[in-house]
Image 1 (cartoon, rainbow, N blue to C red):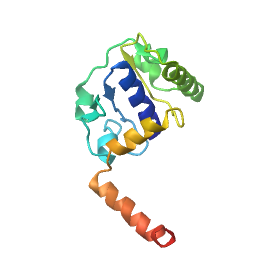
Image 2 (cartoon, one colour):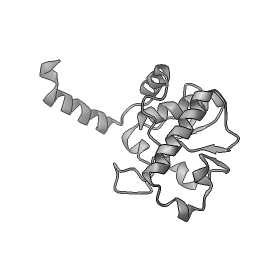
Image 3 (cartoon, rainbow, N blue to C red):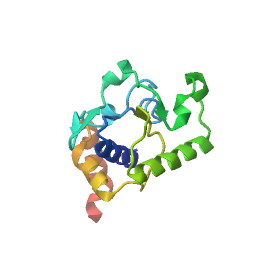
Image 4 (tube, rainbow, N blue to C red):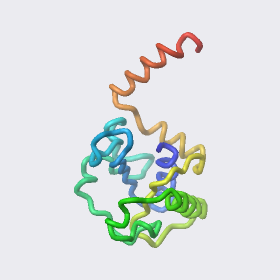
Length: 153
């Protein structure tokens, strides 16, 4: 998720778009309409000059079409199930768009495919500098480190 976030942030930065972090339907939560981002990370308003929406406003926000990749222009009922081939196709379409240096005519670009290792290292660093785990998540990370890794470090 964080590599895809870095790639999406870089695209938003380059094209002057807003970045909406919408992780509803996450496999990491039992609540399908809860955005996972603010569950795990402190909310952010801005990442290096790019306006960010990552809180409950997402549930009241209507994303304007047309959409890129084109799959997302289909009626919602048709989008309930995306086969793996479609997800891979979207990943490749997003990768081509992001690597091209161009923008899209679409009003909303949906980055909902794994883009691991498809962004530059500076974008990754900017995301890791800009987002912070919530205190309870950080406490758990620290406890796991102390329990399993501290003696080998």
